[in-house]
Image 1 (cartoon, rainbow, N blue to C red):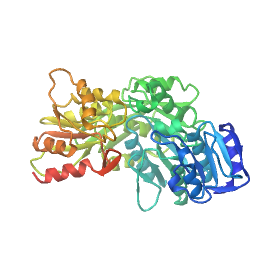
Image 2: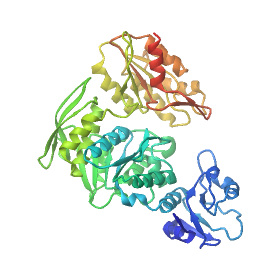
Image 3: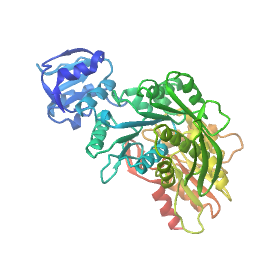
Length: 494
């Protein structure tokens, strides 16, 4: 969408505190990557973790950038329109939505945020909406679905602003009516969503994660809160997990919102949705959901584990608030087997242990997954896990504590990035209580082989941390690696 640079300035409002050049010049599109600039686009210079976009302004201009938005004054060609802003991340979010024609305004926007459970919630909600006859797109950790013939591999949970707005534009072009978004704390902190307003949102839970970025838990919580306090349309349902401690806090801090709490405890006074009966086994979950308005649903899902029961309940609560037919909810929930890498059971030859792959990379998630697998295990429960490099170091010993719920533990590597694998492992090991046995194998393939070859029928091996990911990042380079592929290959050669 081509507009005058002055129009962008008006949309930026007080974010832009100084500007110059030919503000009437027409520009089309925007990017923050100097390598991807196309002639006529706006280049937004942002300071990232590793590099500073201001250093790449000359390259952007050489590729044909027609305007520059930045935080620091730089020398630019005479007449080139420019703006100095207080927050380049937020400015990029606003510029991107305007460049793409504000596609979110023509979609029913449904958001999901929290530390764990976002992806499964999004997949369930998309399937329910499809069963309700609504063409639905989705943006999330595993894939981007724009309503076309094929899915796009996700780069991150909530992509950068221009990519995100482009995905929403494609959804509209493909006649989607709804968009389901996993909304990350980074996206909320950086304003990637621009002025998008949501027609409903789910808060799943909040536990320690990303504190390398947010610095402390309160900052992390307040970023998540923005989705409900600042980005919900008037009267839109704020669906909140009251079984999570931070859920109660969010509930208290949103007194004017349309709050719909949910809880597995049918004695929870604030809950709009609760569970009256719950049965779970290896085949899945059967639950009776009771709503405060007197409606009751009997739901069956192939997903198992208490945390998945919470996820199912939250999605059912939002679906009911949106007046989606019970039939569509039941069909959607029963048809959805979850996302790849979310308590994913692998097909293995006879004689092998059962092998599960899960994305659990926080101590809370690891506890919940091990807790879900324990009643399914007839023999010994083994977990293989590591911690990501250049990320929150404080959670490393906590992961060790959570892993103690298994009978056997193998500590390995999980995207060491620019850290040395053994340095990361050294941070993990102090979390093991005295006397607890564990093995260390830094090579993840070797660790998986050790686990599978060391167990038999009736045992369970959990490969935790990477889930759907198809790479292992070492020294800044992503090498192809997928837990499910590696495990299947090893099991097939026993």
